[in-house]
Image (tube, rainbow, N blue to C red; front, side, top):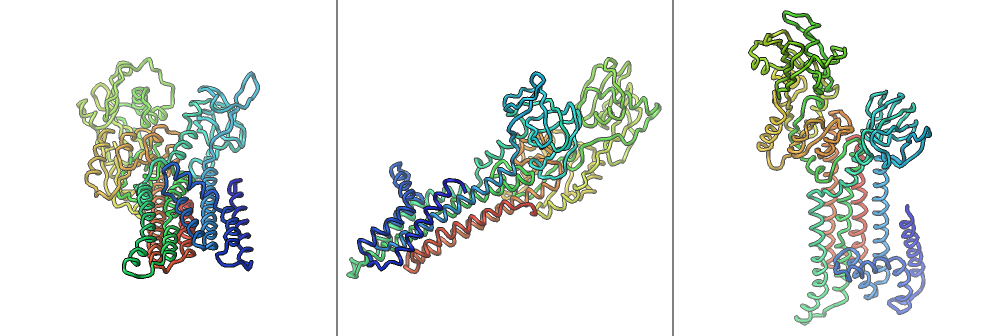
Length: 623
């Protein structure tokens, strides 16, 4: 408990003890002495509620829970129901304390899960390691990270080897090994060796800062249930106040008109009971807390959700559209076969690698790695990248065309027909077909299980979009058990295809697109929910996606959906439970069956139960 919570607890104990003593004293019912003595515990426990209610009235923001409690308890005291007046205020404060403690505990849990903000950076200044604020470190600086310290800023290892704990970012406990030239991101904990890191970003642009900003601002994007509760509370509270006034005045007035005893005290008491019951604390507190806990629990598992509205939408996901490379496959391309036609393997691989020298595409990198020798760029000229087809370049005095069947058709050569689970790179020299190179991208070990888990989570259609050939795409789709596959797509075609799928789906269904976060930003933005996977350190993903999975395990897709479903179940449980109990007790209070003690349960008891239920949204490890 913090200092403020402890102070409230001491007031609760003091008021409760005073009330017990007063109940044991032989005081005359509704005497002035008894009234004065009961004012002591009443003001001890309720002075802050009365003050807030008065401020609300002065600021013309009358209708809130403080106003309801103040009117109800002052009215009870005025009617001589001293015990009930003090008890209502006492139990209300107990409920408020419990709620404050529960929210604080949730925040502390989430802060611990997201404890990735570095406190300092070790910078070498004049040969001496000096601790400085990470904000002061410029791009290109060299920082020292000791074992046990957090990496403060994104960068590249220039010296030393170590293992990193990425659990706070990914939810995974398996350490990651790093060596010189490896990229590292802020928020990871250095576990073993001393490493020297050259920073590549400013602190404000580093992964840790972006993630913390994302989580801290998640509450600004409200879900439909939250917006409903906000509107409901604005309308509901004035309505019940006017209803209470009507309950206090109309029955006695009608009784007077028809010649019956008005019983003013009885109807005012019922109206006050009605006010206590009507307090909407359970809804106003538990619904945002449920989403807050859901987002925090998801963060623990390496699933960053940008707002409660996305949790709401994710729970209704029925169509999952996925990119292939880097999402369902490892995205690590390797040359697995070289088939020359009329030339040697060495010549085919050499000139192909040289033509790809300026490209950063994963396929180009795999060709250069397979060649394994330094490339003399002076021999390469007139490089032209043809979108969706390949590359044309002059190597020495040879025109080299490297690409797919479309490129070969444009060149006017007939490529060899190849059926293989991989990407076939056809090559032509001077408009003559000289062979092909097969590059394979291995499926991730959990991809097949992930598709099955998604269907169990309620996804009715799994779709893969890829730029690969029909044959390769068909083989992968068949292996994984996908429902549909669309192949030979350019980046713009993927957006078009997603728009077609959006147009075909039902209104109450949501479409998610899952990409690797590098070149899928347009599609991530266009889908109902964009999920960037394997986006550790990817600025594009964190900016474009609505949900970010901080590692590259496709099983996290189903986990994210299940977390959202659990959170929304809890939200609706609290809505139905709180409104149901309130309505029942309001009716009982209006007809005189419910007294102040039942009113206390309807207010404080329901709130406590709803808050306890909301906290369950934090526990998502086994969903």
